[in-house]
Length: 216
Image (tube, rainbow, N blue to C red):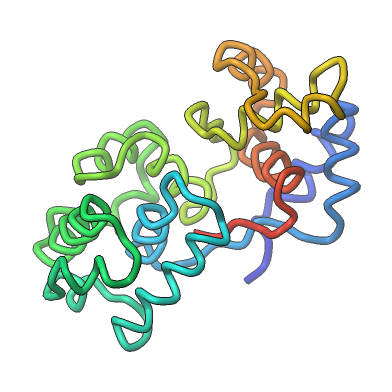
């Protein structure tokens, strides 16, 4: 799947506006955000990936796919037992979240076909009705499924850590301190300088900590 239509323009604007972003974009090489077209898959992956590393999430997802005998689908997961989901490496809570998400897709209480016409906050308001989907997960959906260009997930630890490192007086020392990160206030102020391409900036800041592209 090709990069979003706005990607090259965003790279140029961010590079011209911010020396740090210019360096991160150059060092990342020829990679870009890749979206998955299936809303259910994106949301399910986001739930699986909550509060664990990219590598750990990939491992759990692979076991989840194996339990589903292929691509996980809402109808199939809604019928799976919690014990079966937990055997994939999911916590009890995440298993419950996946069941609730799946049931809402099955019964039509979620209407993904309407989201493209809604603004970011309206999509978030709809998604957080689902158990286990908070603002962070909804923002991941905006970035990775709807390809919204100006999402700035202030609850994302990776984003705060990357900002703290790259805008510190001593980036090397900051990188060694695994607890070091920017405050939400610092990140919010920086985000104002990076509009309207904050999703792109977020993606490159993530890449600076983990070169393996995230995909939900």
